[in-house]
Image (cartoon, rainbow over all chains, first blue to last red; front, side):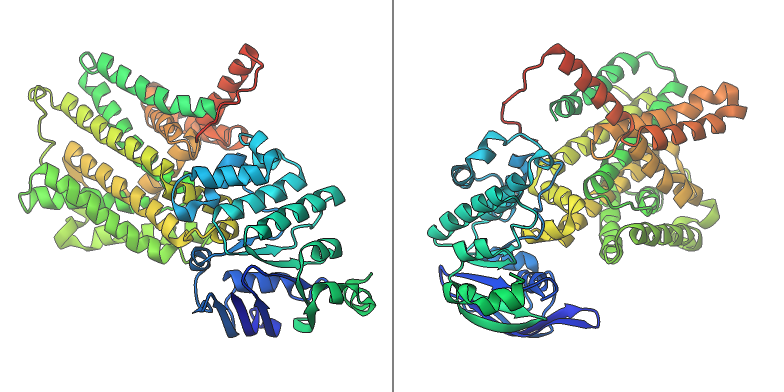
Length: 232
Length: 329
């Protein structure tokens, strides 16, 4: 479904990612792990089109997306949940969700219902300003909003950042049920417990290169990975 | 939120009421001042679609207002066009001009956008001076035909002017409300709040803000067109950055950005004030300056922010129950 081939990307004169190749299967879920500064967020930005690729190819559903704009990628089905609980704080939960379905035109009842089924907490708070909710709720809202765009591939940039263990568990539950709907997931994470709960295949990034790759369960349980890349 | 929606209808209702009561009795001087207020309101409301919705501060709108005025002046004086076709042409040409400016200016953001449009405003003003065959240079245009009479207003040109200006304001206000509620309006708000996040939702950010700029340019042109016909004279000084370009920003900021009705109140206050203070003309500019300082320092959300806070306080003391109704914007 998504295939990244020999990707290189960076900022100004600094190249952050070198020669990255990642594959996400149809309805598959992939985690990309790595310490701070390994290039995880840069990878997300390159896939969502916020950052141009310097080299290599991004192919999605058989179409070359390397030069496509962020808007075109969202329309093709690659939807990103940006880093750091990104919601519009001064808008209500409902307004946030509506903006999620912006590419499909105005409010979609069934989509909204689906989002509320998945996150009942949001239904209760639909008229509250998003900025007044807890960190965990904001993250769930960001997730629900991304789902409003009807993604076929959901791209998540460290969704557990700064969240409590309880909130992390909620995010994990949500991601598992999103996967069950047939949506592919590409999760970029530092948190091992979420990676274990969601990941099928795993890649480990180290200073902008793919250092390891393999089935998530195998890779994550290996002591070498925990010790050398994630500081456990 | 709820109060805001109420105000969106209450303010226009008050304007209509004042017009119905006041127009038959007001003298020519009052009618003229009211007409200028309405012209500036057209400019302010449509400018709010740009500044309030997208957060981009343009100083080129004085020039666009001028493009509308000169287009009407030229077409009605030199080419013998009727006023209504000239009005439409002015709006269209100003809109096209605005779109071209926007395509250049949106390569920048923040303070650079303001400075770039300031440059465009300054260059535009010089163009009005230099392009003498079209604009009449320093002397400008004289003897521009007035507005055509509406049925029943043939013997009262000042009343006629005010009514036509009010009709155009109604169109501008209605169109701005539609814009605000449209999906492009929603996209503009998202872009204002967070550009990266808006992009990640698939919003074409360039398209959204370009639409807002072009929209405001169309109505700036229409306001300019009315101005040309009402004052029968057009000269470059009315369209300098300091004259109209900067004033428009002041109306919107003093009135309250992003509310559409706030800028109308801003235009009323800023245009009416020097007239009211005419008796104390020595202090007029001084007081005007003080009022600006007051708003920037103590009421950054403008008159609208003031009124909304007051309304909220009143409704809160009235009932404590939190409304659970689904609330569309």
